[in-house]
Image (cartoon, rainbow, N blue to C red; front, side, top):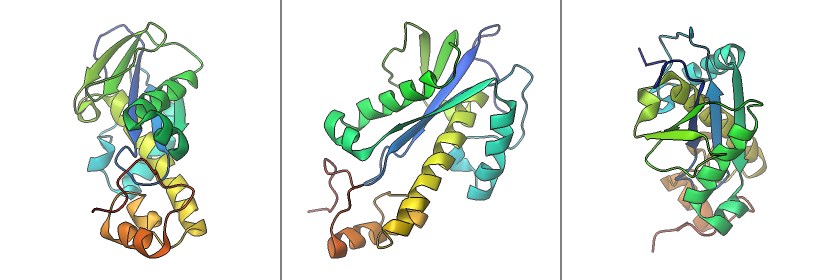
Length: 193
């Protein structure tokens, strides 16, 4: 069972992103504030869950959360400001959607740009430790996967409905054969030399 709090008696927002290592599509972040009595035996780092479990958890998290938000930074912005800054920006946009300011922000990873002078804690593998970060990881991943599945209908040659834009063999073969789309990250190494 994951931990509910980092610091007791503080309103904590968990933050995580999905899609950093992709060659196409946006980076998507989520921020989630869970109630202190929230419990769920299945909730874990989204990478440890099946697609079916992630999609089953999403409405549970959205209903139970005191607040939640999604932040999106598209591939053009990623190319302009780099993926690390885009990840932070997506998290800030997700925090903007909460409608309330937390006392503290728990971030999955080892770096973060401060947000509105609110204290933050960077926690490596935090999505496998704290419920709020795990909840954010599930929302970020499911929202991003849905976006890539929709884009795959428009651009069917890259296998995005399966690889979600990650640099798989089929994705790279699609780039080699059909070129890039308006959703590819041109600042990334799309094809190995």
